[in-house]
Length: 294
Image (cartoon, rainbow, N blue to C red):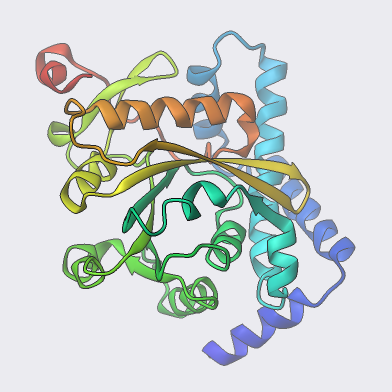
């Protein structure tokens, strides 16, 4: 079954772009107007993040988000047959910010938020970095078939994908050599009592401390990636060095800096963020979480 599905996706990827994007527009219509996929969550998030905007303005952001969401799905299918050169053309970045660290900083943590198009970014960037290993953590899928399919696609140019459920046991095998490790800074914490609580769009919000703790433990530099959509099918990343060494920062300070960077990226291009996941699930309590606030 795996080879049948792979062949199907590969065949679809060979269709002209005009056909694939027409399909994307049709799927957008179904998701937004017919099924209303997670619209309550999307509009709820946008109301919290942008209370100063009108309903019409937030609706425009929502519609653009759904277009980007579907485009990412279609563009991921395109990757099954897209050439390495075309991939690099469609996703550009100032990779010299990271490559200049090579030779003096053995480990780099590349941090961003849930922006489009991360699948294209992975396959483009892994071809351009000088570091031996390009590592990324991901959430396993419910379907073993699609788990294998996406893992094959994501690793086709050398990325090493580590599932979150095996991270504690597998990650250590790569830490003896130089690497770039990709992780998101806007991950919801699994334990609110171990989270870092900081301001995000004017609301005290919990964040997983993983990026900060990992940088301290493995002595990595931290680079933030601003992801932006240039036009349909084309994206860019602006890398910004946050710190070559995180020792000396106050607890929670790195997390706060990264969260602020995510917010800056979102404000610059609101529709390019994954609004369909619940960012503000837990209400802040000074009595319960005040000691964790930064």
